[in-house]
Amino acid sequence: MNKIIVVLFLTLFGNKVFAQELEIQTFGNKNDKALIFLHGGPGYNSVPFEQTTANELANNGFFVISYDRRGEGRNENLKAEYTFTQTFEDLNQIFQKYNLKKATLIGHSFGGIIGTMFTDKYSDKIDNLILVSVPISMPQTFENIIASSKEIYTKKDDKVNLNYINMLQNMDSTSLEYATYSFMHAMSNGFYSTKNPNQKAIELYQKFKTDTLLQKYASKNEYLAPQKFWENEHYTSLSIKINLENLKNKKVSVYGIYGKEDGLYSPEQIDSLVNILGDENVEYLENSSHNVFIDRQNEFIDLVKKWTN
Image 1 (cartoon, rainbow, N blue to C red):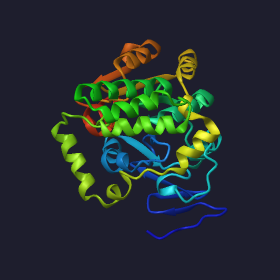
Image 2 (cartoon, rainbow, N blue to C red):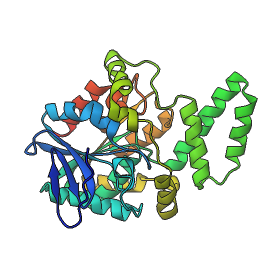
Image 3 (tube, rainbow, N blue to C red):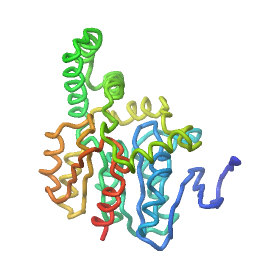
């Protein structure tokens, strides 16, 4: 794909739109219900969602808008401030570009934090907010990762990793290093993967071996975005419980989809979300981990359709 530089105008190139240099992907008919996908991270991208699920949602009657945040993924080279303010400005420009009076936000992981804070600030623009594997409290998430990892290492009598866990527990829990090492233990212990994928999930994950875009971006994590977001926003200490309570009081429709095999969150954390949103607004799915839209794609799409009716 040729590189296009946009200064003071918008350029259309296929179904990719460059708005003030920000590359955006769209799927489906622009007259259908609008869904905006917000990816995880910081330092990740929307490619796994786009290459596995975006078209399926479009085929079910949605206009799907997806993009990588400024300074991340395919927009990695764009100048970024790595602040929530700039992230909200970009999102508002997407509403303006597509003439959206309202839309549903689907926030995955860190993208759900951004989606919740944006919705709290601009609730008049949001039809529904759907949280997918989102850390409601970052400190509680780290505590759960560490406790679960320690249990695994104890059962294995893994003295080396137990020593690392003890060191981690003595670190500054607000530091980026604490968060980084916690996520490293989560990855090494398979907390992001389901142990019992269904046939559809197996087929979708096979695409990661053959799809050139997935091969390039699915395992790519940048380091500048986490560092800068931490410096500017201290996101590793965030909790969005107050924001969710605000949205409840504003009568904004908020839903949650989580996998029971997602090792980042304990059942108690899901219970706390249920206490805020209500049992009917939270789905806790078997045989699913962090990427619910892949692990249980059919159920994920059915829930999105149900909640946006």
